[in-house]
Image (tube, rainbow, N blue to C red; front, side, top):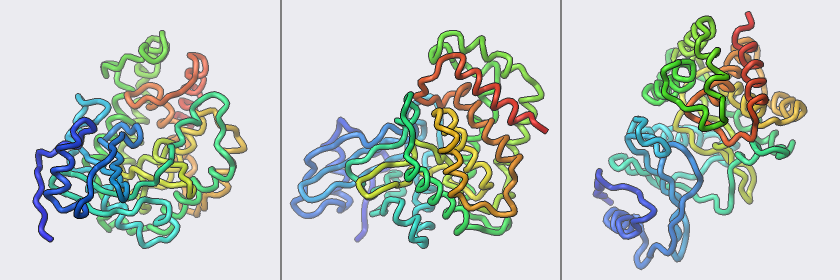
Length: 338
């Protein structure tokens, strides 16, 4: 069936009529099927994501726009949804990861709309950032097992061009390794915690720190890595569903270093004040190999902590000034340790 698309189509919670017309024109609704309910599905930063409920089914629609949904002044690659589609298509060959990711029903490459399985009543893991909320050991095992399988089962030669995702990596690079350490980045940290801007000035003025961050950023952008990475594997990309753990939002995926991915997980567990036993559970269920670079992993862990506290992509952390500064000091030691 040949479909027609409207490249100007915008997925909008407040325009159900426009969505119905779009789906009808493209033959995406069954005969006699109508939209009964629309709602926002999750609170992600990057894209517009809606749950569509009809009289016979429900599904998720996700659209990428030429900017970040939460920060419209921040430009982003329009066709990043294609990277997510490629990732999901690639991992279908592995049963464990296939079962942990949504089934893809169709993609409209012109309108940058992806239609996928609705996991129903589910929530992400960002509640672990709240005081006293600890992730269950069984959940930690699932988090570790899925990412370990991804890194272990999808390993490539350095010459293979697999999901380079250059534009998204450049965007991520700026917000991880550059802007958080730039004294003229324009971020207002006092809007997060009063006094945080001046209390963290020393990190933005630390030239040795900025040099190491630059070096790590070059590693991140290099093609030296051999593992398929989700690219943004943190609690906002983990789902609790009635059928167990699920992994979503791999739009930052690329072939890279496993050390970067695992470091992101550990950094978020630290910022969420999870116990050492939980972190040990993660590391105990992750399958390391002889190529893993522990020093690189430690430095990437520190960078992720710093960029989340100093950068634009803030988390719902329930941490006071002293707790944030303590995390930053620990992260600094990890990054600068030689």
